[in-house]
Length: 229
Image (tube, rainbow, N blue to C red; front, side):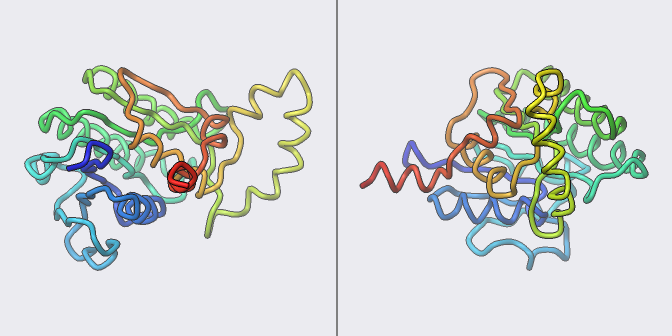
């Protein structure tokens, strides 16, 4: 395989972010191995290699991670809310630990994880679980990129647009500027750009990407086209 082309193992492959990221990675010439639950095979983008398994059980898929050099973990409870605290522990935390175990076993070169902005005044249980997953990744010794968005705007996730005037005011005031930036809104397009950039520019060590950097990253495919021209 070309040195600029990667083989990526993706969990959460049929979700809100997963399908779009896989399509992006395939369009950029990468190989994708996508973990999918039995019965959901038809939801995968055309062109990826399907791996049927259970994201909560590393033994069901860890032998299929190889030959991936990159592992992207996107499993999580849909539409997080304070009422889903137990689901965060039984799904987000368990799948995160399983993903780390599988990545270590397969000796992947780079692990990419979508966490959440920290600290934050709400969603305590959600943030605690994501922080536990971050610690597990760090303790594993894997090279890793941790992306920390707060809320990702996109289809079915648009109500926070109502908060934009408040964000503008908080960002203007010196005493609230840092918090407004760290807990800012990002678009789904910006999130896909940041994930694709993380895949194509793997970290050495443990790298954290906060909201301002997620917003600043350009479309990788646009940069490639510009360089080619």
